[in-house]
Length: 574
Image (cartoon, rainbow, N blue to C red; front, side):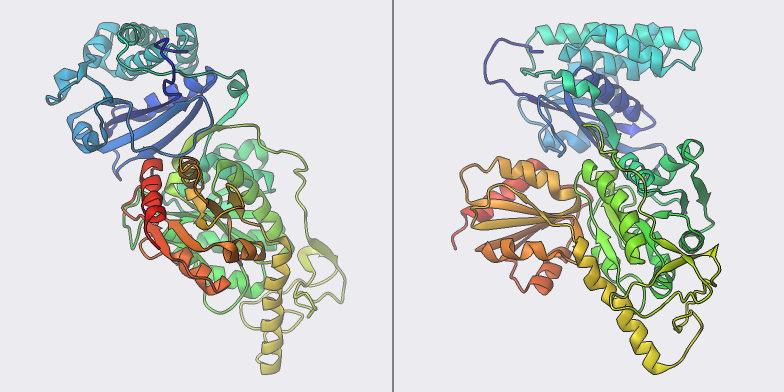
């Protein structure tokens, strides 16, 4: 697909739609991303939205590219503001080459605005609410996507609506398509996109959906949560799959009940998940500590958003790492994982259940709003060997739940599965699980629990090196900053710099030591105000982080922003 025979044209287009909640931005994003992927193009979509049902100023960014993309850009190639607030909010990101399309009747004056009378076209098709279909049609017409593909999508999208609604949306989309085609012929926007047949078979998924799929692949059959954005998406996705996968779903009355119900489910032999955000997890602190004392497996999905308190409830941040590291009172082992891609979100969530079961401890999957709400195409997920690795035993009459062992791992029994009594208690206890205030035993039990932390390192997940191992400067990232760092480093050609992405945050993997020692200059990129992971690195590896590249305004890093900040530090004199 191309708009001009000229060479060296962009193979990556950034489309941004802005408007108020309720104006159909989500509908447009859904339609465009599916049509683009179905046409053979790589797509990535991310959102910025306010905490309100109606109004405000929301936007969605859609990247369409000849190659894989999964990071946001500052640049806008095609901007479609649906109201004046969107134009004002996003105007600073516009460049001279940006193409701005909008309904002039509903927008303030803006130099270079190309009038696209959405409301008029929609009303001519039968209803002003068809404006979303007009917009979809205009964009796919501009990009040269097949009209029949658009028509098939609309018929499927509105298949459960009356025939008049289907017909009206088809007419509106066709009119928008003609508008887009006419605009393409003017050569206003120059690009060269290459379709790949293999992309049409890709999955198009959000982070929330992939976390949910990873949980199902890990044998999850119970979820108890209290809704709290952005963790709610995992709860609702799994609720939609409950009947097909035999999943028990409970929307608890509060977060305290949710985590205690999950512990009860694990005690009975289920594989349970809790999904929440920072404020909700704070309420779960006592239950999390209970998991440490009774040595129960537990998987908690902690979806970060800016705090403190309610903060910015629909924006993103990596500010809850310290909360995760120090969750629960007392000392006990736990595992903290932070996926950086959708593929990792699936594999690490799946693995979290086996590791929780194997080591009888709580596992936190640390994500954030950006990763969860982002949408991109990925190849098929690895569905081999989905049988969960169950770690419980059949008990005998002499069974002791907390038998002291060299590894710290005691055989975990289930009530009713064997002849033994499975006794657990939140108080300190003896090997049989009975309450004890024997202080010598207290020391032995604490040591037993902590020995599991060393055992856990046998399954440590090594960090991933981004770039050549012939580097002087090493840029460390964790979690959702993975893709933006990878793309930014790719633009810094010829420099002795590499990246190192951590997806296991605690206990930190020993495999990172050699890379960190090799670095002459160490930088850390993270989305918080204090450099929480940088401090953890310095403490754990006895290294020095020269520069902390931080962002905490509620938005993720963009590729251009991170590239510029890295470039300035790499060019700086020693």
